[in-house]
Amino acid sequence: MTRRLGVVLLALHLLAVLAAGQGVVEGTFDEHALARLGAETFAVAQGRTVEVRSWENPNRTSQTLRGAGAFVVSLAASPDGRLLAAGDKDGHIMVWEIASGDLLFKKYAHRFAVWSVAFSPDGMLLASGAFDGTVRLWDTGSWVEVGLLIEPRLVDAENKDRAHMGWVRCVTFSPDGRTLATSGCDGYMRIWDVDSLRLRRDPIQAGINVYFVTFSPDGQFLGCVTNPGEIRLYRTDTWEEAIRLRAGRISSVYAMAFSPDGTRIVVGGFSNKVEVWDVASRTMVAEYAGHTDSIWGVIVFPDGERVVTTSRDNTVRLWRIAR
Image (cartoon, rainbow, N blue to C red):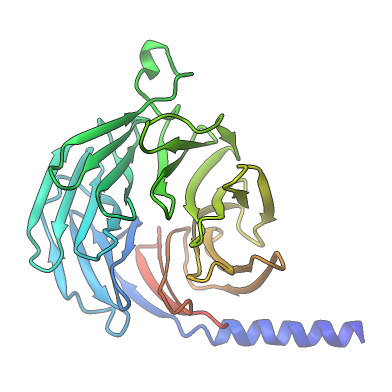
């Protein structure tokens, strides 16, 4: 009976893989720079330009945004879908109005590559994190810098004014906008109060490198993915670890996204697979192959069934996830 059940589960898993219905877009896309714009559209960087594409016709660029100073490596859309922010490898931040394609703001903001940008839920702030270890906040009405997050333990001259020792990999706001979480190659997550710009608690060591952090849609969990290949969830009322999952075949997890209802987590990394995890059962419910190099970008559309990924293989892939 047990053997028969195992065969049935394997068959269902294979059917899920075959039903993924992936589409492939060839190009020279940056593996980090991917953002969902609306219910049907997404943005992806290709060199110094950013392209707007749709799920229904991903091979067609509906709009091209120009003006970056170097290769674009991070993207984020404003909550109302009106603006798109980007960071490039030379330390510039750019913001475009999507409808017109106009470049509204461009500034040399960090000394090195801006690996992550994020809008606050009310759209009034933009956070940026960079290779130089700094995290900055920008007012989206005036585009004036209004905050520099400083880890008080980093007090020597070399690390002065830094939020992390080493690269800042990710910045993300909580759904209520009161908290900013950051992660970096120093292996820590840091939890900041947005109003005071101070740490809410001691840094959380979560791995060798913490590549990505994101809040669950209901704000009850902060998730992160790490090297080694782990997925961790922390309760936001206590900041204690609640769930730790060992990714199936991914030795280093680089990107993650919650489904809109918060019941599933989609992750990608090395070695090149997309994995779907059920939060309640703590089990991997589907796995999808196709990329030929590590996955660095993952977004989930509002229906929870459509996923877009970017990879170091320079392709964008579209997946339909079995529910």
